[in-house]
Length: 130
Image 1 (cartoon, one colour):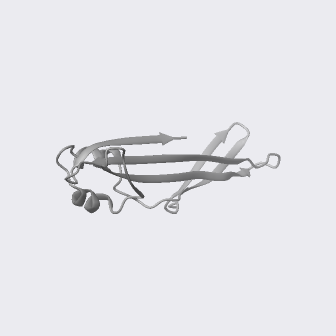
Image 2: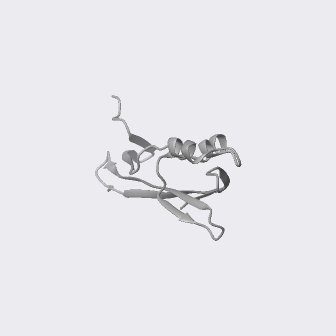
Image 3: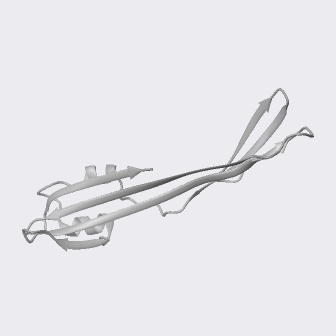
């Protein structure tokens, strides 16, 4: 029997019985091309234009000016995934059920500084996972 997409079935065999765990993984963000690989491949200092950045990533989350009057764009992507479930109980009369849950939060920030000619002067990527 095939399991539904995005669902995992874990089977634990023990001397005292067999347990079946059902775990479903849920990701709460849309897929995006805002990744470290895309940034490294596509953003070239002193060459890439604002128009090219807009085409790649769309409008930034925040637009500011630095102390030198250069435009600074900030892109942010947050993701949260969780895996939860319970074991299906045991196949023998004694036993019980265990709950399980894990979660991961990821943050990705891209900060781009443009020069007076709207060309990428510098950029930084900040990525965290917890």
